[in-house]
Structure formats: C-alpha cells, structure tokens
Length: 193
Image 1 (tube, rainbow, N blue to C red):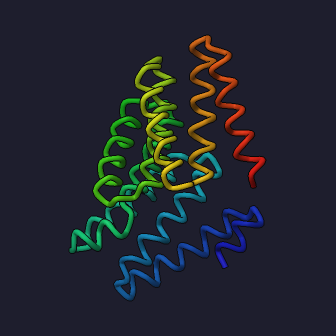
Image 2: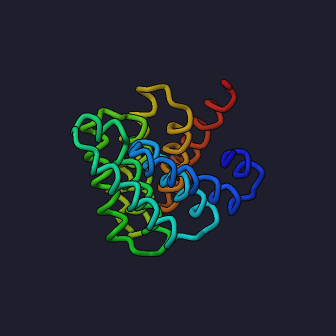
Image 3: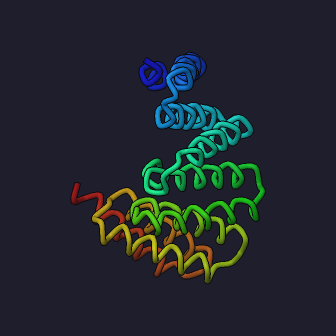
C-alpha cells in the first residue's frame, strides 16, 4: 500500500504505511523486512529533499543490516547500497569529504559482494563528486570504469549515466569534440531501444 501512495506522490501517507511495516517487522523480529522498510522510508524522505531524515533512516537501515549475524547474509542485505545513499545525502548537503568516504566504503563492499551494477552506479557518483571538487583526472578515470562495467553487464541505465558524465567532464575540460562523441554514443544507445 505504501508503494501505491508513493507512486501517486503522497509520500507522507506512504511513509506512514511503511512505518507500520517497520513496527510489524520489529514485533516479529524480521530484520530483513525491517531493514527494507527503513530504506524505503529513507528513499521517500530523499525524494522530498528531507535529507536529514533520509540520512537518519538509511543509518538505521545500515544498523539493522549490521545486526544480521552472518557475513554472507549481511552482504545479501545490500548495506553498501545504504552507504552509497548516505553518500548521496552528504553530497546534497555539501559535505563532500563525508560523501567521498561513504562512496568509497560502498564501492569496497560492492566489489566484495560482486555487485557490478552498484559498482558502476557508485563510480558515477564518485566521478561526479570529483568533478565538483575539480579533480578532473580522477573523475575521468572513475567515469570510464563505470562505463566499462555498464558495458560489460549490458546495463543501459549505467551506460547512459556514465556516458553523460563523461560528456560533461569533457565539456568542463574544454574538449567539445570529445564531449560530443559521448553524446553521440548515448543517442546511439537510445536509438537501439
């Protein structure tokens, strides 16, 4: 029901419904459901630009993830995605060092979990962060890594994200021709849909 409210844009009602799921999950000691529900509430707050609340809920989801006893089970709960989301919040709040730290931690855990889709996504976020900091060489390197992972997996969303990041980087570096090459590659991918 929370998903229905969320899709209709009624985020407050969606959050209330998902809070009920959190309460039920706690009552039944269902850590995975609690963790998922906390993450969903965080996402709802993020969509509304309520970054402090999003950060709180993603931290709570991460804490629940850490209480899951088995390392394998913990990796399967995707805590690295919460850490990446926390990095996004820090980025939005302008705390770039904290965002970088979160992205790097998320990347390390994504590699450990062999989740190449998340690796590509985190690399894109990290590249965008480096671009904001004027670290264009690092930004270029991680954006190229993100693109390679997207291509390896034939993951259209991550390919397009990385191509757009690379285009923006080359424009920022004053290389309009190279930027246009990446725009053309994006268009070619889109035409193939």
